[in-house]
Image 1 (tube, one colour):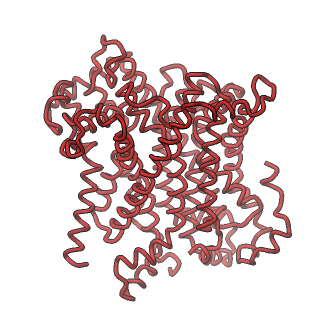
Image 2 (cartoon, rainbow over the protein chains, first blue to last red):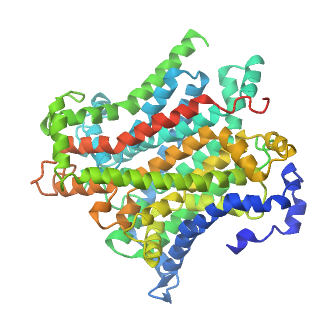
Image 3 (cartoon, rainbow over the protein chains, first blue to last red):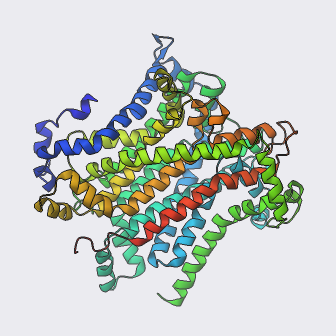
Length: 314
Length: 288
């Protein structure tokens, strides 16, 4: 809390280029804190405090400092290597396909907005709305060649039964397809909304200048929604490296096919729920967080996502 | 646009629609069929509406129609959390995008850190916090943590940063409007599409959240729909035949119907939120 309210050191302020926003800083501090204050309280209570407690329990057992014992135990767990390998493969497959799907569909929809656009967005969103047990049921049937509407596709891939689809190397393909189907729709809506809110005169200017639809997309629209794409990337990397729902959903329906510790996050849940060992669960969760924060930091610095001045964010 | 590229565009969008739409079409048809027909019949066959009625009466026969209670609970929890989340995150996103103040970067960074924090790390400390405040088992133990919504703050932040011109605010300042008035009378009306989007995603999160209510709530009369359905379906083995007891007539068609009931509000919410997204309220705002 203290770091949030201490004023910026003058040395730092002096080295920054003077922007229009610097001029109006001090007299407006009160108004600003009325706007961000309530959220800040919630951030501390329901974000930082629990996260800090998790960090504490990963180092302290039964009131005494345990050193890195929980951390060491986690990193020596024979299941972690497998889980990390699964998740890395999943990320390598899923993240590029998801990003490509989201970008191409959002831009294609925006190139010629019309009545059908809204209907299509709803259709793209549909698989994301099905959660829990219903999702388990749905996806088990989707990968069963006997009953799936995708049967021709499954036969083409030489999948003869649901067990076939959920064993060996093909499980990662099934999870990727499922992950794209579940997550793409929401991001298409976010990106389409961002494209729709862009100032129309800029896009018209590009059109008047004779830019093709492709050039407009690549050189005008994409740079203007750059921060949104960065946001999709950060969130998706984090959610992909913490993949939990998809393997859990498939394994509840077909026990024994997919290990309950298939992903890193599932391993963390196993520590917390099966073993009742919250120290280890917290340590592993924080390790996942560190990976996500590193990725976020790279994306944020690359895209200058935090710029306030609207002219330099374009 | 040439005829060829128009055709390619339509084909691409349609292909995607088939990929995303088929699973839901299957789920929509599943309650009309019998469990046997689901595994042996044609993939997209239609059974009868009578089967849907049967499936629904099987679902409601569980604990004297407890399912309706869960629906009510879910609506109350979600409505309260979303309302509170909007009150917190729209002003915060605006201030972060349009003002430079001490602690701004720290707030943005900590928000993204908590946003990508694995729920496994947060839920147990949240439980301890709530039990220290003597709130576990109450509606507040679900509503308060859910109304902390850093994702919503980021959506608001990104929206105001990209789409609210500083010149518009400066014009208001010249007219003598206070900072809070600028937010309320200039920023909020122009951000209606973004606010609708945040409300929609916030609603989705509250409606589908499982782990938090699972940990906080113990009395099944306070359960959310997701929580109730999961325990109902798992105790009857509708999804996984190897477990559960068979005295209740809950099988695959019932599970499919339960899934449709659980996702229907999301689809309605989607249609409602979408009306705002189409309008493009900000178009030409600066010129006018």
